[in-house]
Length: 112
Length: 255
Image 1: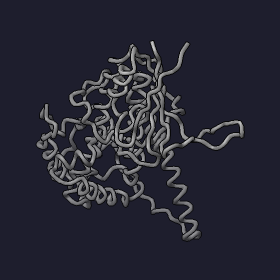
Image 2: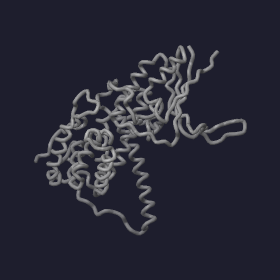
Image 3: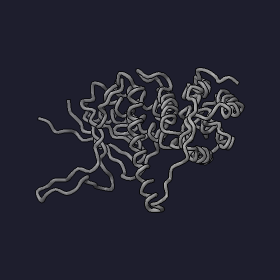
Image 4: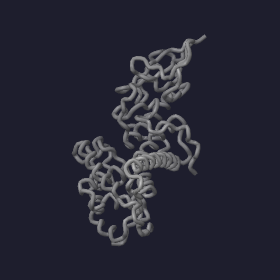
């Protein structure tokens, strides 16, 4: 089955409103429900990426992160799905991923 | 037992970590309130419990820092527990993280204060005169104590209920605004007034003396009454009163 890499991007420096405890309760439940629903698909929950880092090329290393189009990659996840549409469904139903100020790029991983 | 190995947790997520990258709208998944492994209203209840507990330890004047520390711990829990599952003792985990957040902030604040003092007047000793000790046993339950703090006479009456809803029940300003039929901005203003008064509390008083507690009883009754009758939920499915959320005072001081 093809593998897909999810790359989450968000506009840097834009402070998102913090969820209230009541909202966190809902998010926790919704997220667990999502995880359960797609447990066959989620290969690697991945995680949030720490800021900073370095960008290394043949000319040397510069301070990261690599910023293009004013957005920073904030996290990643690895998903296995029978089709791109299924991968899309996994992404769409993940709570809190596709929101104002945040998007997710879905790329199929080339395999043997 | 609290776990100690949380050095890797990123605190102060501005909106939850990946994949929970935000939470200003929770309307995407209505009805998903069943949280496996967590009791209903767990996050709100823990908010109230931890704010009351840490306010007692750190002092009422640091209530804003305490609230930040607890909020940060809940956010960390949200991202960590969804990724790695629940710890054996979620309450203890939260307490641990909130404590670490708070001590970090207090150290930073003390550092800033020291710099300020040095800049303004290096020679002046800034200590308050020593305050006689009070009996902590007069108010055993932290939540009850917090309720009495919310009913400080110097806090404007309209602000007391708002502060109680925020600190005891763990509601956000937006949620309070909806319940009290007022704007979020107005709620923030009332909270600021209340916190401002508390910030100017004397340093060493952890619990007000008995006479002060007695004098606040009418206000406490009023706030409790208001909390228990405000059962209007904007997304009503169960008409649960706000008072049932975090407040289960174990006893009452004799009046």
